[in-house]
Image 1 (cartoon, each protein chain N blue to C red):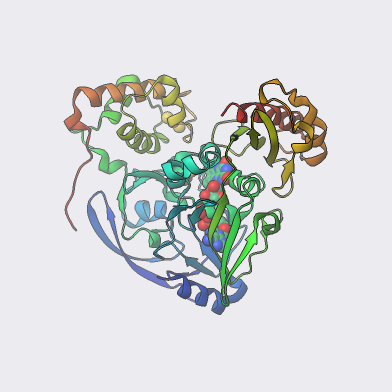
Image 2: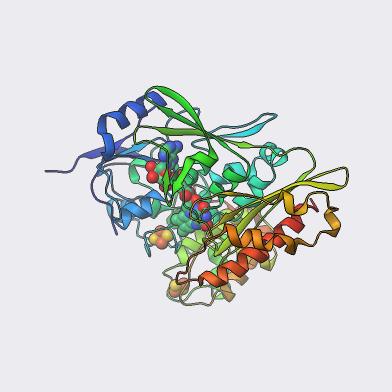
Length: 173
Length: 284
Ligand SMILES: Cc1cc2nc3c(=O)[nH]c(=O)nc-3n(C[C@H](O)[C@H](O)[C@H](O)COP(=O)(O)OP(=O)(O)OC[C@H]3O[C@@H](n4cnc5c(N)ncnc54)[C@H](O)[C@@H]3O)c2cc1C
Ligand code: FES
Ligand code: FES
């Protein structure tokens, strides 16, 4: 028996992608395999590690706990959509570099998306709030101290240059 | 770690969802936020051959406050209810408990009604449902039936919902004037499932306690309400020795051991949390 597929149009980082996928295709796999946007990482596939976190209509969600067929009608932003060139880095990416907020980098895309959305809603967090903001993301390398520092530094950068804090727009393809 | 194959249905009305559920029989599963169901599918603990995604059904995402209840539709996300100022004013316990449900990224997608339909005794909102004497609005092929929270939960992950029924909304009750509430839990990490948790409500009239009740997370098999009124009625809220409720709590709960904590530890924790929650509730 061949598996039924569904034609879908999904907006990722401002670009509309048309693909045909089985119902069980996770959004995380859709991004990585079908769209070859491999910035989104996959760790646990049951919602615990946060590596796969993307923004759905601006709000962080686990892409491993959503099906691609549920994504049409939503704007998906992945780490590639945060301003992914050395010239146009998002404040959170900039802060991660300055504060040494990553080592192997596996967890980083999930932290970047989560923190970007958090700082939009809470532009001036305390250190305790920064900790709570990242409590849903696991990192096996850094020990978190530098990630907490990066959250606070990113808030500072965003305040200094508010214009740079937005995510990129896009075309249709 | 990938789900088995299934046929995906995306009904655009409750009626359409119900007719699909009737057609596919026991092979169908409702998909709401997917924050409990998709992990189960990914781990292949279940492989339903039909998924009925209700996320496109209009009208299910509303929070309505009336004089008796806060009515929460099937597609209201935990986060939406947590932020709803009307719901908070009508029953602060909702926000107090929702703050402890998972991490924000999970709350952004998971629904409150879905967590009640899922009926995990480690979930916060089933416990809030019994404490507030919530009413379940269940729609099936022959119309709507209303079931009290006390009769809804039947066992671990088991409810009285039939395979062809939708939990369309939950009406959380409001407490009488003079009631303070608190929600406390202890987890290894904020946002994880609690080792033990308690929801408490204490009503004070003319300076004395007239009623007190509590419900629990992770230490009872099904969420149930414990009435503590007899132990503390007539006392002044500021002068109560809350340890008088200890024996009642210990008789009521039946915690189990797992890799996170022993049963005995959970007993001690539940007792302490209940005392603190009651003391906190009277200050609100
Ligand atoms: C990492 C992680 C941590 C979590 N931590 C917590 C926690 O600390 N506390 C907690 O309470 N929860 C926790 N959750 C679960 C979360 O709260 C879920 O959102 C919730 O349990 C289920 O809601 P849902 O909308 O996602 O339902 P789904 O996953 O879509 O469905 C769950 C079940 O309910 C059924 N169902 C859903 N909606 C209806 C309906 N309207 N009518 C009939 N049946 C329905 C489905 O068929 C399915 O069987 C966690 C989840 C994850 C992934
Ligand atoms: S891969 Fe999605 S949360 Fe771990
Ligand atoms: S940098 Fe290696 S897991 Fe976080």
